[in-house]
Structures are given as structure tokens and as C-alpha cells.
Length: 272
Image 1 (spheres, rainbow, N blue to C red):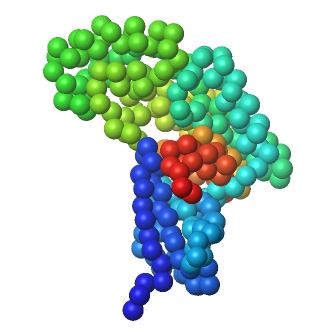
Image 2: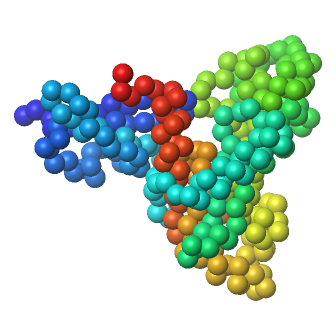
Image 3: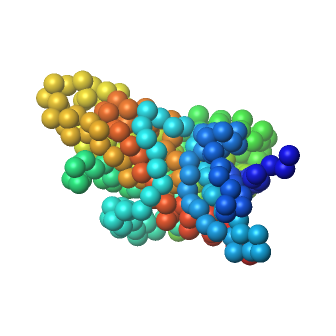
């Protein structure tokens, strides 16, 4: 018996794209397709060929969290894009990923922010633990580390690159890996966490936990309960941000569908 569908998979700079193809008149039970487990539906189109095919695009989600997930479009993303543009302009940031998050409930914006790039742009790490991590991750000799220490500041100065991108001039960093090399990529600086921290006036998870346990913040907690987080600049929300959102009862995360489509189209020609 011939299969009623075909599956292809592509890894696009860390994004795992799963493409489901089947004839237009075919009924498909996607919940029974193994390759689509832990994947989120992104987009559907019709391939205009002699045998018309539906093409469905799904993206693997490494962490679902305790909330609903959806790719969609919204005017809120336009507001977030303005915040991101302000951040890029302020610090001259030219890196690829810069996320923005907004928490909304009953059509009212509760809190919103963009990831703070000032924590890693054009700054050579000074923490010895960071250098030890770098050496261990890429099995670098002491002489190589010393060379990077000497020349990394020159690469970063005025380049608009983050540390990870600048390091590519010295070592090979495979696409979709090594983001922990950016001090600004610490979980406390992710836009979802930062928006929540700003709302409670804190800057780390320990103080965040104290704030949400404080009876004086009950009204703020009620605002966030069952709220929706709008996320742009990435294709999933990480485990650490999911944990923080679960603590305040966020109900849903909506990811910017248009941003993800544009990102994929920049790196993969679907319709050639």
C-alpha cells in the first residue's frame, strides 16, 4: 500500500522545519504522524503542479511549557518591532536574533520589552569562567585562547556584532549552536523574562520569585493570570522562559508567524 503522504526535514540555522506533502483530496491525521510530534503547525500552501499537492510546514518545538502555543499575526508584533528597532539603533546591533515580548490580557497590554543587547554588544567577556567554558566547548589550546583574548576586542570594536558572531573569525561555530557564548543571551535577558522582571521591578529569577510571593503584588499576579505572551524574533520560547511564565499563570504564547516565514524564506527557497 502506497503511503498517503511524504515527509521531508530541513535544519535551517537551528530551526528544524518539517514539510508534510500530500495530494489535495487526501485526508491526513497529522496527530498520528510520528515526525510531527512536538512540532507546531506554521503554514499551509498548495503546490501548483500537475498532481496538486498540499504542503504543510511544521516547526519542531524543543519545549512546550505549560501553555498553549500558536503561530499567528497580530498588530502587537508591529509595536514589538518598533521596540526592537530602537534597541538595534541605540546600540548599533547587527546580529540576527533580537527578541521582543508583550503580555496582553483582555486587549490590554500589561508589559512589553525587547531583549537588551547592551549586555553583550561590543564587549569582550572578562569573566575567567566564560573563557574556561569557551576553551572547553571547542577544545582550544592555551595559545589559541590567548590569541582570541588579544584580538577579540579589535573585532568587536565598532562592528555591531555580538561576541558569538565575532568569535567566528577565530573558530568554527556550527549554525544554531553556541548562543550561550553571548553573555546577553543568559536566560534573565530573554525578552519574555525581561518583560516580567520589568513588571515586578526585579532583574533576576531569585528576586522574581520573592516578588510573586509578596502579598503586595497580588493585583499584578491577577493581571498576568491567563494572559497571552506575544513573541517575535524567534520560533520558540525556551524552557527557562516557560518556567517563569508558568509561575505567573500565562495561558498562551503566540509566536510571530510572519517573522518566522521571512526568516525561513531568507534561508530556503520553498518555491524554486
